[in-house]
Length: 350
Image (cartoon, rainbow, N blue to C red; front, side):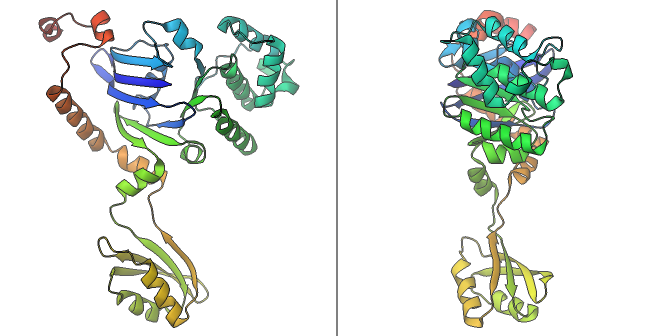
């Protein structure tokens, strides 16, 4: 549904987006993450046709955003970080205006707007002025306008900003349900939101994509050593000694008493060794109750912090340039042909 090829955006000498490429399949919910100034908003604005790219191609359901802007934009529902609302309109007037503006085609306009209002639960405020709504309800109206016309692709920038915890849960549930009929790109700084909603994560930093995978795969790739946390009801010294003597164990570090008679240990196995069965058998033989045993995999916050290190982005950018020089295609991108330098001499002079 979405295909980005070699997308680049420059603001004068500032390189905001540096030759990024990715695709999003039908029905996917993809979390688009990055620190402030990483290039997220620029990429999303190019996706929606709000900004033009310096180089590269953007296709929405097969329609290139440059060559077929009308057809491409028909496929998109967009919620920017600040919803484009008119405070002097009622909710119903505003949604009716958006319906006409989009030139939406449904069997019944009134029925379609009622359905959208029901989806985001704003039917009971549809006759109120937008100016008099709370921030949370204004956000819901913004989501409603993105849904008008049943676009195949939804691009949501911070969709739960300003909502209370109950509303956040409702909107997350709504976003998950939308994947049955829509493809969703979700940009947010709330990492727990990505964990609970998204099928896949794309992380951008300093204009380059530093990760594009599921959270689980990223965790496994970045967790070089498998470490485990064990809580056991046993004498601390005896447990420490017995665990340390296991053949596959590299190290055991005590983490103190967590409950009366219950101690926690950090277990580090030797490289490529699985200690789970050995630990279980040891505790069974000693009759020491196991209260907790878990793999300390990296969570999304750990992954984000690791991959948004400036050195990671700079390394990836260098590798991308090296690969591009080795496999440079003879034909320039369509954006380049239309708007870029006409030849290499002109490019050098620029």
